[in-house]
Length: 94
Image 1 (cartoon, rainbow, N blue to C red):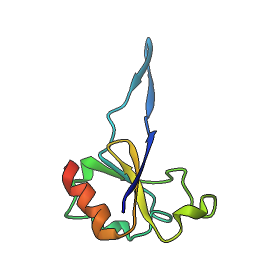
Image 2 (cartoon, rainbow, N blue to C red):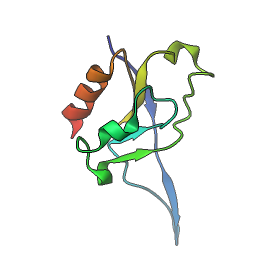
Image 3 (spheres, rainbow, N blue to C red):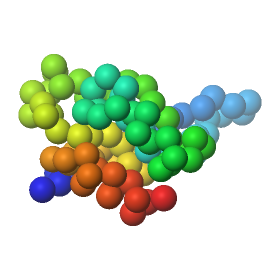
């Protein structure tokens, strides 16, 4: 069962004359907390389409995420029960 939240991740860039929204990566996951080895993204997701780093959803702070696979897919926080299910969601967006 997949649980999705309507939380969006946006990156705002300051530019001369104001601010602008940066193009979102299709996949953003945390090397430490997302529940799988992010090296597995290699060959499945183009480098230009994914990024790794803190996503602000540490399992220590959010115990309901323990044992889950999660990250931001197209800016939407997505939680899955299995790695296969998460990678299936990735396949749908790339």
